[in-house]
Amino acid sequence: MSRAVVAIVGSPNVGKSTLFNRIVGERISIVEDTPGVTRDRIYANGTWLTRSFRLIDTGGIEVAGQDFGEQIKMQAEIAIEEADVIVFVANGREGMNADDQYVARMLQRSKKPVILAINKIDDQAFMNNIYEFYALGVGDPIAISSSHGIGIGDLLDKIIELLPEEVDDHVEGEIRFSLIGRPNVGKSSLTNAILGEERVIVSDIAGTTRDAVDTLFEKDGQKYRVVDTAGMRKKGKIYENIEKYSILRALSAIEKSDVILVLIDGDTGVIEQDRHVAGYAHEAGKGVVLVVNKWDLVTKDEKTMQKMEKKLREEFKYLDYAPIIFLSAKTHQRVQNIFSLIQMVYENNRKRVQTSVFNDVLIDAQAMNPTTSFNGGRLKIYYGNQVSICPPTFILFVNDPEYLHFSYKRYLENRIRDSFGFEGTPIHIIARKRD
Image: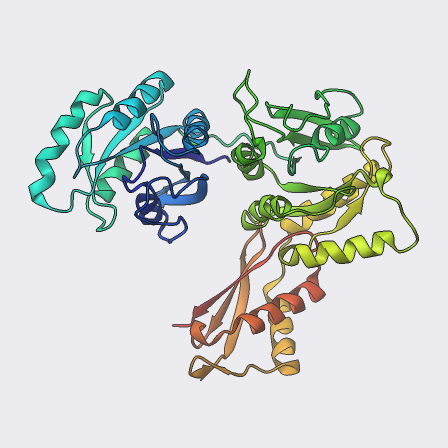
């Protein structure tokens, strides 16, 4: 099931990042009293009442200003296009300005549901300032203070009211997998190789695929659905630095998928953006396969593959559970081997462990490596059980969760993997105090 998308937009220095942090409950976005400091969209999941949604924090929009003003405008344009609901933030202390009017015209053209949030109303003396914002023509203003949490509940109620209904389009028995990675890494070529036909336009120009292609097919009696996440929905224009704008499409595909193929360019190696993109798949709790493409272009000896695997393990420490496959979409070398990995990872992401067997592993783990003192006490694990799948999640009932050191948690994860497998899927361990 794909989450609805809520975008926070507005001119610079109106408190968008503070509102973003307030809604998601963490200080994720940089907050600094300097116009334009948030230059890239930040993504996080928000929850209110029974609904969850994906929240986008955009950079500011200006008629004129900093050199990066045009780029910020493009970020907001794409966020507006991808969003189901838009929260338009203005500064209630300074009053309406030309930037607000410019943003309002953009939003009116979008035809999307808009909520007008007048921020920095933390004093009754500024309350009357909100009425002038009616002139923007985007609806009734809601007075809020992101810093103090005033009016945030009313704002969230309005967001939930306007969100589209959730639709679960997942088909029973169907394995969905997505291909993610930076531009020109070979996502379209690999999609074509997997499908055995030229369904996706292939070009050497980075970012030429602008629409996700969702294709259902069958292989050895198993139904699969592959989504090529190469680009954006917006047609007719290729943005500069398009890799910055492909993340949102990848996030939507990740949410709808069971298994994620993270593509790495075997010829050019790993770059920072590869780690950034792969992190989204890991955080989403999906099954992951690291796919090294363009292996036909690499000059090799008997140790090349081993060296590359070692390099990948160093670069993607958080994906140490993910299997690695070396292939060439162009020559179709090892492409067919992907299916066995996808199926294995899919099954591991849904694997359930019997409670009695799991507790036997916990007892053995503590006997082999007893807990030590941490945070003023020593952890005692009474028992545990698996509470969910996708990803496999385990609750440990303990004397005090504060006594669980991250290194011991890592040790337990390794013991669980040694005992039950779980190759290709993250696993979550949650410590809870036993009542």
